[in-house]
Image: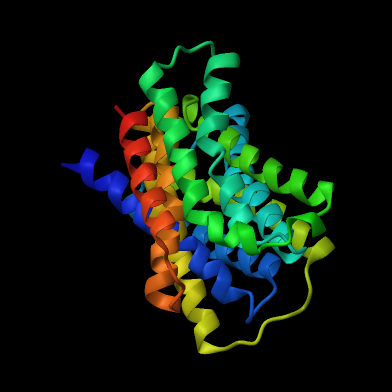
Length: 286
């Protein structure tokens, strides 16, 4: 039962991250918000590890790998991607770039790790990406992509590649560490990266509203503690390409949530894309 419920819960939680990013923009500087978010996540995991008295990672190499994984999966992923959107990149284009992660993972698995992927897996990834494109097409058509500079696009793509590599690091000896101690050390790596970004790119903007604190609480407890822990748990227990294929379902579910919470429209093309993405995920995970 956990192998069925965990992927569904992960996709549902992860897809709500777009709503949080959209909501936070009006209340706080994204870099300082992310730095505070992951600082609190680090504290939560540290207290959980202390309460359970679980062993901490030992050795400079293992600790360094944990710091690297956190820096890649959270710091160099969310910081640059939020920065790209603050520079004018539409959320729809960012989501489409984000949907490349399963393809990046598959390419790394084949070209670097010399693994063989079945034709069904490649078909599933292609269908899933096509479905995501159909779901996001109305937003893409309305966006002024010509106004984007090449550095912004490259940085956005680099953030997704960072998440891809960071996720695959979880398949290293890190898998032997307890999730609570691993979470504490990895989020410390993210905090270091995000504080540097906040000092360089951030602005002193924090309106201290109840909505902002609500977003922060949800981002800490749901997106990071629950969502990221589920992603790591799935990566450790499954093949990397099969796990990251779940992310193809994130943009379609985000569109559905946007329709439900913000009254955004959904047309027949988007519904077809949603169906294709789900079929693609199912094929890629076979």
